Image (cartoon, rainbow, N blue to C red; front, side, top):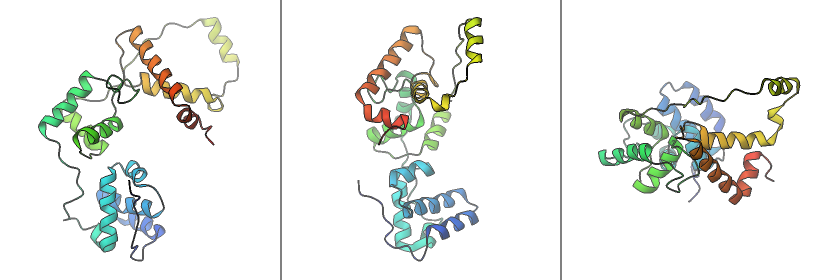
Length: 227
């Protein structure tokens, strides 16, 4: 994918654009200026898209507007292109059923045990050819009667003697690299998922373990150990 470039800055610098952002009250227009500034500062298009919560195609459109006509054209409110393509009713229903009846792991799309807007965004772009923001997906699911909920598990009562012993020890999880791995596992396997039984949890953990064994470089990056 070709890197986005500012071919004509029209006299603007990242510092001047940042000052301009603060003056703009309209959130959508401020988002456009921020996207252009970030590209000007050297960020990749996909990185900017993640930062401002739009798809890369939209960021590319903002850059094209700015290169062509500077800030005036970028902030022209009557300019229609740049909106996320509309999903048909059939596609929206397919997304709903995807969330209700499958998991990313079952489809081989990801190791995660539940869908989130980031995974749905990439899935929709791949299968429907539609670039849509994560916020738009969240609103779509809400219109379809779905909402994000965090399941609550009832933990078994711990051993009082072991708990007291642990309280006496000095524990610094932020200094322990394995805690980052546990958090990754929790976010992938447990967060926003209600497993039907213990065996289902075991299988999900096994998939995660297999996933990290196949991707040592990614593990090192997540632990902050990559060179």
